[in-house]
Amino acid sequence: MDARHIHLNQPSTVPSFSELSRYALTARVLRKALLAHLDETLQAVPYQEGEIIMIKLKINGQEQNWGGDPDLPLLWFIRDEIGLTGTKFGCGQALCGSCTVIVDKQAVRACVTSVSDVRDREVTTIEGLHPTGDHPVQKAWRQLNVPQCGFCQTGQIMQAAALLMGNPKPSHDQIRESLSGNICRCGCYQRIENAVHLASTGV
Ligand code: FES
Ligand code: FES
Image (cartoon, rainbow, N blue to C red):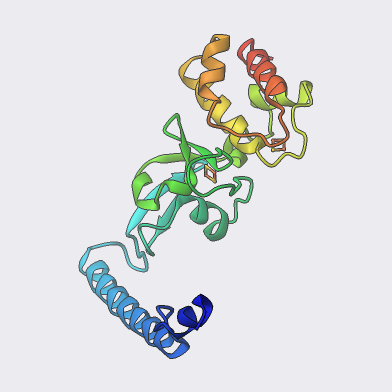
C-alpha cells in the first residue's frame, strides 16, 4: 500500500454536498430569525412613518440610510448599494489603498471599514470630491498626466486630498509618508508625488 493509497482511505474532512446544504439551510433560518428580530426592534423605535432606519450616514453630502447588515464593508455599500463605482476594490485587506475614501477629513480604507463604523459621519468619495472634477489635486493630476492604467488613481487622489486638508503645504517626506500605503502597480510614484506638490501650490 503506497502513501497515496493510505491518504485516499483516510476519512474525508471535506464536508459532503448534503452537509453543505444543511449548513446553508441553517444559515438561512438564522438569518431569517435575525431579520425578524431587527424588524421588531425597528418598529419599536418611533421613526417617522415609512422610515426604516438603523444606520444613518452622509455620502457626498447626501443622507443615506442602511437597515441591513451593520458589518457590511463601506466599500460594498458605496459600490453596490448606492452605485458609486469610482472607488475601487484591490486587495480587500487595507494593503493597497485603492478603496480610499475620506471620512471626516481622514483617509480611510473602505474595504475594512464597516457601515456601522461611519454611522452619523461624513463620507466623501471621488465622485464628491469636487462637483466638476476640479479639486486642486484632480487639476494637478491632469496637468501632469499622472495615471497610467488608472486603477489605483482614485485611492491616490483621495489620499492626497485628505493629506492637503490637514496639511496644505506638506514637505516632500510628508507626501511620501502619507502616500506610502497606496500601491501603484504601474509605478507612477514620481508623477504622483510631483502632482501632490503641484496641488499644494494651489493650481
Ligand atoms: S482594497 Fe482596500 S486597501 Fe486594497
Ligand atoms: S496607474 Fe496603474 S496601478 Fe496605478
